[in-house]
Length: 193
Image (cartoon, rainbow, N blue to C red; front, top):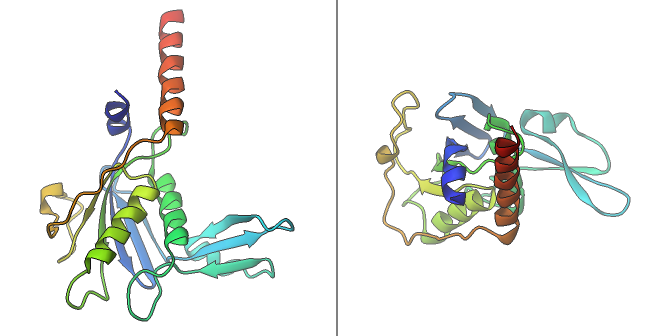
């Protein structure tokens, strides 16, 4: 029931990653986030960190208590900071999510690394990109290598994945409780009205 509910309330997001550009497109709504892959992280007096801005807006955040990070900038590979990359994708998924704000997005995600692919992705890079998307809230992840996919005629079977061991994720107890409360509330209001 939980997976059925999440599948009805989620979209497909096609994410193309360059070192200096992140383009994420909601396939169903055609809405697009196409900006620099930057995150401005503020640190308060107690040492707590929070996201202040993402994308091009992060460039404007130049204060002593902030640092600007590009999680996809590294001399050898297209991935340098897992935690910041995960936060970045969480925010992008939220921006592209058009359903109720009560439910966090759980999209089907197609990750397409666009550069630094000499020899193809290693198994470690493949798994890192998958874990990144799952950690950001994806319910299903595909890694595409090859020519860019057409958004207008998007078909998940177009994704050219090399064979990898699938990574299974389990819903955490917090998700189960959260969706249980949502379902119970919906049933309560349906009976009441």
